[in-house]
Length: 167
Image 1 (spheres, rainbow, N blue to C red):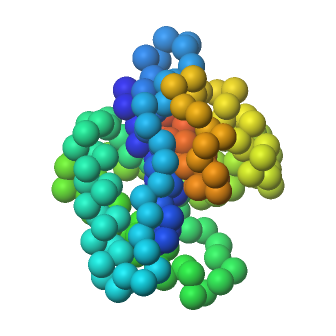
Image 2: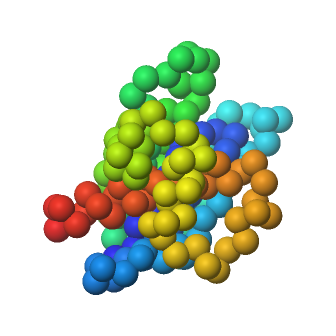
């Protein structure tokens, strides 16, 4: 089973793609990283880029499901609309390819991965490294973008665990 997880954002949209045999083995990370859009681009052009890039990932990896982080509570109202729009274009790309989607709040992701809803980014990343096979990647070279990519891996893992309970 192949799962794509998305951590939506207009400047940086994290993605994580995992594959699980479902036989008690660690899921393998097929790809993870970020879709980047320049702040100088018009908002419509940024969404177009996100839509195109998510479509490319879906076409390339042919996921069985897509998991995406949903907005549950947002402190900054200026940020909530663009993030919602980025989430929307990813959902559109999934719907056009008839890929089932699951949505998870940040709290659900943290609870699923660490058992603690207020886990730090470092705690999340440490646990994700335990749960998946990242041997094909040099995480240290990713820089700041690794936070968004790891968030997306956490969302993908939630999708995996949810699908195991559902299918």
